[in-house]
Length: 396
Ligand code: BGC
Image 1 (tube, rainbow, N blue to C red):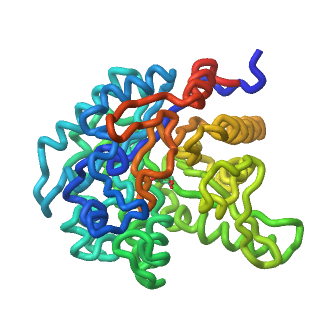
Image 2 (tube, rainbow, N blue to C red; image 1 turned 90 degrees about the vertical axis):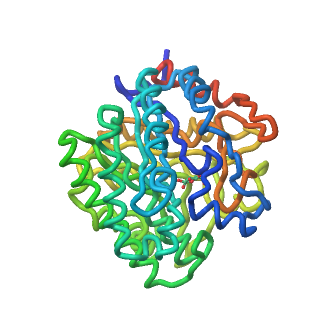
């Protein structure tokens, strides 16, 4: 007997992005930036997981895990390596992956932009440049019809606010700036690009399902009214504002949820609880793993009256000692949300395989499947088995 049974047709899947897995993404701004020695473990994305060549075997692994959904990312810099020049070979390559996913009966979430830019666009100011909205739309117009019939969910942008913050406030990602006006312009252009993309996709495919994958950091507080107010303000600006800016341009709500912050005594306290993290690296202690936050995140968007998908959720856990609990506790809150009437339709775990974790290089391990980067050998972790059982039984 299952304790938690999920609705019929619930989507169980995994998410991956292009740059983090494909390897050799030479015409992108990240590739150039990594070569300048910016990655904390001294690596570059290099061959990454060689997903570019091994996608069939990796998709087969997802099928073996009984999954019925797959979130794939494509690389703009491969598709348009030089301004206005589209690479038919790259289009064919992604078409082949999409065909393969369809053949394997996996529902496809296709991410059109996941943090990386073609280098030519980065040289023109990237998303900070207003023209980026035009460039993004031109790129979409070129590819949408080619992928017609192969995509179930169009994810225009991955984590726009997280990106703008990391690139233009925290100075962590290229172009490593710390300027509020640049940050805000970037957010606005990303918002405009999404709205324009929403229209373009719908013009060509009226019934398309279009949305974004929005990073949610849930701010919560003890019962003190001041802290509560402050947490609400943070939740508004970080979590809700982008959806407000792009209102009426979503067919579903996509949420990437990893952690929360506790606001206490009018300060944000970064604290970890629930999932013990002693085995994790020190810097992971800066965030709070708070499974209930996934429920609160869904709750925040319930009033949009749109289907909700968890488009990412996962844990950096090299030993795989905590991942099973992590998944279980988050799914318990999803089940709770469903019982409270939330229209949740799917859960995509981040990630199928270990991959290149941006400025932290290859050290973090988010994969259900471990990768030996020397040999490119794939080894399913115990948590993969656990997750595959859940997908098979549609519950646990
Ligand atoms: C990003 C992924 C990243 C993951 C783990 C998400 O916010 O979309 O690209 O790998 O976090 O850090």
